[in-house]
Image 1 (tube, rainbow, N blue to C red):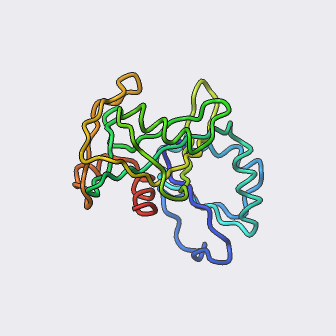
Image 2 (tube, rainbow, N blue to C red):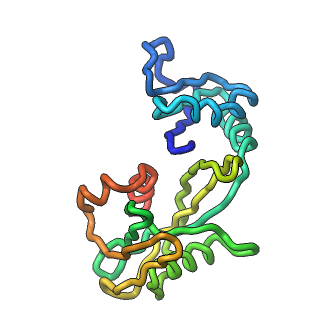
Length: 202
């Protein structure tokens, strides 16, 4: 949320909440709709907070209340492996990332995922090989807070280290193939959610 981690936890399985408070973590227990609506403002005023933990007995209900406070957007992308097991990475605005982008009107998730990979990397002949894994990201634009759900698909590319063409208009400066395990300089300069995607789909 606004570049902070937000974790939803069933209250029955939560850690004891009477432990000493930590300056960089905010614990919320069964938050009300108003508390969730005011959370983005609180975070903007509290740069020391690095993580929010929401403990609740009705997980689905609280999640729906959380989503209601945002303009929701959908995006899709992929973890693409070539015939030798290399994974396709891009460098966007100075950080390592995986190719993805917003859905166009009337577009299916799978269609958007393949299109975005091809547009952002200049690499074609990719196909989806399994079910998607979802991540969530919030940000503010023109005074409106957005919640973006990204659907990541495992993909394969019919080629070996095929050279790519970065989509400069999207801030992409490099397209490359890397073999796991990935270099520390790559993983230390990416987003936390990307590691979750890699763990889920590789």
